[in-house]
Image 1 (cartoon, rainbow, N blue to C red):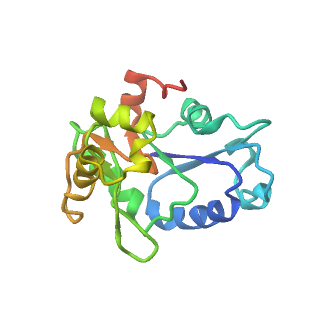
Image 2 (spheres, rainbow, N blue to C red):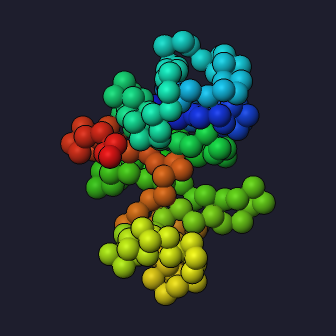
Length: 194
């Protein structure tokens, strides 16, 4: 039913916590967990010791997120594929709910959950497609220097101006956790590594 793609780089402590939350999050789904490690120097082996060796790839160098995620996506067998950062922790039933939503809404190609900070407050998880002005400000580093600029504020306002208790259409889903239909991946191809 579901392939879970995780890319790790020196994040084994949080990876262990993520892996511990997956069984309750998938509630009845047939799941494969795929992990690519990008040349970590921490205790990666102990974090994944309970996974079958065929589910783990250990890259000899850091290929960065997109290339490593593509390694998982290319071998994923689930009808849905979720790419998730290693510092995410799932609530019980979360992945099952996302998968069920895709099953019952054939017009939707990808979904993301509501994100919460550890203290339970809402974390931005969606937004508007960045404008050219935003891209220029970002490329010049000005969004960091002037975080309250009008263009940056418009993007962030859109990210927070939704009802977290309801389903919302989004132009952009933040990448910490995105579930996609396999046929969407087959149609558009793997992620652009450039």
